[in-house]
Length: 373
Image 1 (tube, rainbow, N blue to C red):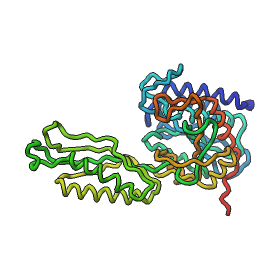
Image 2: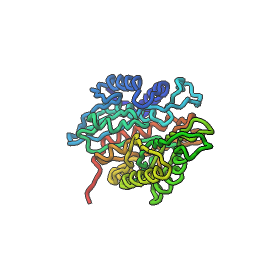
Image 3: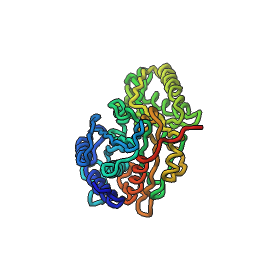
Image 4: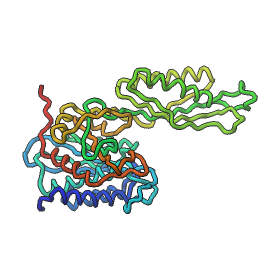
């Protein structure tokens, strides 16, 4: 295969991105997406391995060095009806509103380059399912996607950062998150006889009021109750309330403390209101902390600048708990494309994918990050 130039690779990425943009699928349900990506990889001559709908494939490097550098893209969509007006817009009530179609297109373009011109390093191409709430990264790891990997890298499109610029940090780039429900069981009665009931909504209101300052009192954390449901009628004491909550944190040690403190708060409220409460943890992501040497490597390769962390979460953090690595933001903001991630109008200038393709290719030829002192 002849060496495809950057222009050809970018055109390829645009075609791939538009095809994927038309068929967004939710986390864990990416069957058509997975089949599309598999077909592209097999066309390029790769042997593809599966983990549920996720895929990974290896490229043998020319330098004969031990170890493998992994490059990761994610490909699930969101349950958001699209309003971009694009000629290739999704019409299925779902949308690639977080740029995952772009992530996958850039990595497939890099895979095309590696098939024509093998990289110096052994490279593992990881196409991950279920980033949006499924914790697909942990399942990919269980399925062997990190076996033999010595470093891992990924890029995420960023509408707050100027188009074409890279940014990361060696602190906490994304917060850890515990998504959980609190189920408060009470006893119904007529509101004229409240003493005969056990008011689950009153207990829930107190939990909301007291849990936020409790969880956030040490800083570097955020507590939010986003949904509450309960009760049956305006004149009936509620016998049940369900709160859907999110705790986000920068310090991993704080998670265990907060779980204990929230349990103590609920026990106190149960004693006061006569209720019985149960906490149901739905998912836990660790904070995403990039390796300092890998951050320095990205500064050298793509002039990655410093950017502060945020309270959104990214399951790339699971990979970084196992091996050194770095995630970089790739800016897409310009005078036209200003919609935030997870917006029904999110879009980007597709020419920016050339920067991600170049960066993936450069990583395939780069040495391991230097951790000597």
